[in-house]
Length: 78
Image 1 (cartoon, rainbow, N blue to C red):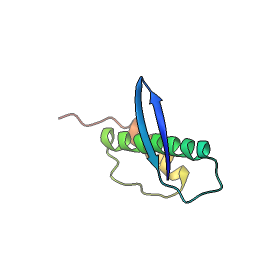
Image 2: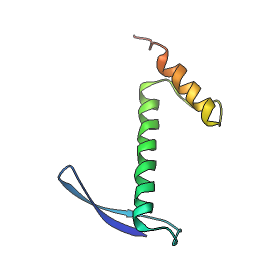
Image 3: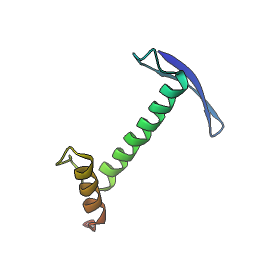
Image 4: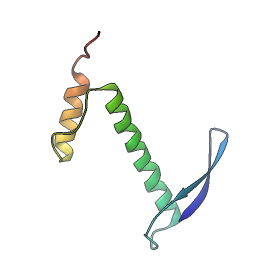
């Protein structure tokens, strides 16, 4: 377990991360978790704002196409 202090936006948070990779540096693990969290937030935003219930394909290209089509299709109002 890695515990570090995150000091962003004038708020201090104590964050604990779980890993089984003892070879990687602590900073690399922290950076990987930050990037993953940004991806999770993006998917959350896509699911909230666009009608994406699930992805039809598994490849990166299939997901990009589905996101593009969904985001470029006008939303139904009402």
